Length: 210
Image: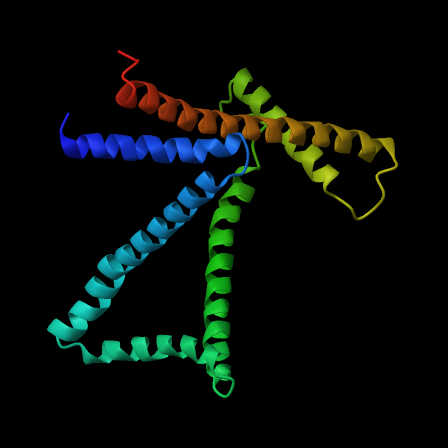
């Protein structure tokens, strides 16, 4: 094994053990590597922002291609730093409010683009159109689930009548099943990461696995 690979393997092993040490309890060893990881992530994020955005999309066209008008967004962005001045802090608030408005509009647009197709696709046919019995059963189960879950979240009136209480109860159980499946999927993903780290420690580091 080359020296570079050996250093990389030992560094990965020490970092992995440091992060896993939190399973025992909170300790300084874990906190030190947690801070190192956050610092490296912040530094890498700054480098990526400069390489992919500031250099390619702003500085290079401004300094090497003569697009002088790109200095305007930079001057506007500098208004953020007026927050440190009591006299000129209002400039930063104007910029922040403007960006919040643009962000809210984009978020609403994204929500509409995502929720619209979901709502339209929830109207499933229960007969005709050449549907097979299995497709009809699947669509029927889907519609029952949809109605029961919506009934559970319908708070316009009290759910004291059996016609409303029973579907709401079924909807709650269906939600529990869905949340359980989602949680199980999350746990499986975490175990996959844990198994990968164990394979690294036992295989590449300690060479106990062939």
